[in-house]
Length: 169
Image (cartoon, rainbow, N blue to C red):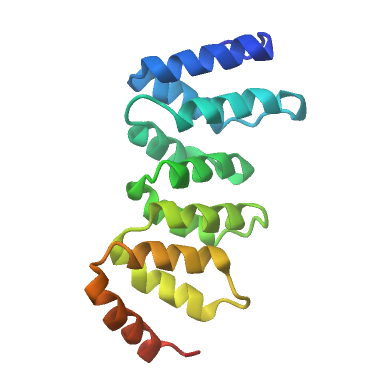
């Protein structure tokens, strides 16, 4: 994957790497996704995201490693990928990014949340919803995703419990 090659060739190479799979391909593609791309290279970043979205294998270790080291706006694509691939082990990292001062990054984390939540996250999400200034669709979607991880017979009890603890029922 040569970043200086033609965009079409780069895209084909990224797609081929995703079909072959393997740890080294996952790590290389994830690192490319978290890279600070210049405005004239958005097609390259899009190609990497498409390749990782259909990656043949487990990208979780590479993604978790990248989320540990990435900073600022470079994290947005990685957070989106974690949500899209439903990487549940990224849940705590996504929750941490929710509190980011970066005005562009916090919404990316909120959008990714619904894909990474675990059943045990339902109380954290309820607290965030309770303190939300606006009607936050991403948090509501994340709450619904967490709720759906429980048996349907428990839904009413869980929601009532959350309402009882809410400061804004």
